[in-house]
Length: 529
Image (cartoon, rainbow, N blue to C red; front, side):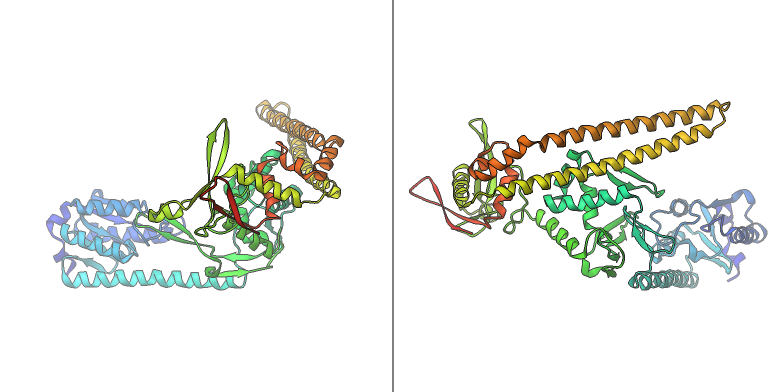
């Protein structure tokens, strides 16, 4: 049908919308060509005036895969629905929306509002069957074209990733060298801090306890900003878990650990994949801070820490006084006891309660046993079986001294970094023209700030060294020897944390099966492993 027959006077009375989705910076010629063609059609042939043409260019550089994040397309659909548009123009109308659902919705609204569509090939009336069929085919082909482009690009990326050659952003502590190979960060402080992090986690067995250890030792953890600058910040639990879950620290090349999808409102959702679903995983692909076996063991520890009491020894030792935390088994149903605490007689008492059947099925409670008598009996039993070991105290002291030396070495690195930054600020200040006071005052202020940071780092190191030396003095050494010889004294010492008692217990007892006597108040254990 002739284009002039499709354009009616009531169309010309409304505005003509020119939709541009090309990037004006990189597609300047395409933009000018699109404006020229549409202007010649509307102004020269169809009767629209220049002041009636409304250019919608909010979506330049945006993908047409969805309309959720395209404000210009949303405005266009809104104006068409309000009956303000007589014609919608574009160089290729299929580029209005590469999502067929969005495209068909726009066609339906244009048909209801009696709005025409124009591109380089001609004028279309969405209310007409033939034009609607042709526009629908163009929309389907546009969506298929987008799918083919994505599949081609995605296939190339996956093929390169399977060979371990696709360059991905690296976590803090790993960098690319001049040849493109992954190497450890040349910054000594960054490397030693990350090594100390993994050693601390192997010792304490918990991400949160690792964070507490860093806070106690006064250590900061490196973090890389978007501009590749490395800063040192207090370690957080989320950072610790993220580092422990990242296989790159184990020297493994991994790609596709997360799956990204967009919801109906255009927001991006992230779903973690299991190791078997990763598109690429190549162990020992580059240097790492730990071995692949140690990384797998760390993942098992993190998983066990989050399981609670679903399995034996699933929970790490915690601060509570319940000695058999995670190791007390109900002698009636075979499930692990839960621990509940109650404040009585001015102190906190533990109770071992088996209430899973009551919680899930409404059955009566299996057992409820007071914790202090059981813990006291277990403590006596362990003290009777332990033999004195004087050498153990010396080994403990050596281990504590090694930890303190490692922490002090990391503090020295922080002092060295602060000294380097202060020297750099000084050189900048000395090179500036003294008459240029605006710049000189700013550089002098930066130099003074670096000097304050340096002084603070030195003070913190000296204070930490004094604290560590107090712990390692001869009096403490004699106390360690005495307590090691007399295990009862060590066990009953109020300064011994409950967490440490539970750690000692993990090397001796696997689990304890408890059965509460019906005739007597004292509980007994049926099995002790």
